[in-house]
Amino acid sequence: MRIDTVEVALSPVGQVALLKSDNRAIPVFVDATVAQSIHAALGGAKTRRPLMHDLMHTCAIRQQ
Image (tube, rainbow, N blue to C red):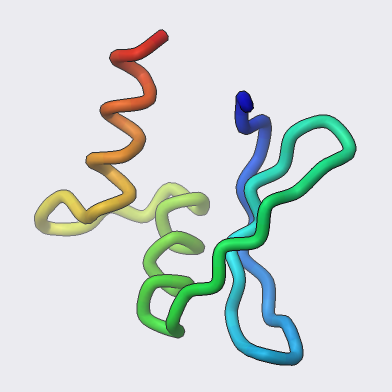
């Protein structure tokens, strides 16, 4: 499955990262710290060191 967009949202049971493709979405439930980190990365914020989502993004680019 190719992911088109990623969104961070608050659900009744906690924070969730939504991996969207076409008309489908895969929910990945995360804690507040991870949700904040993903949200910041989606907004273009830079950190002093790479975080897990940076590693995953790098791996995804190399597979293409």
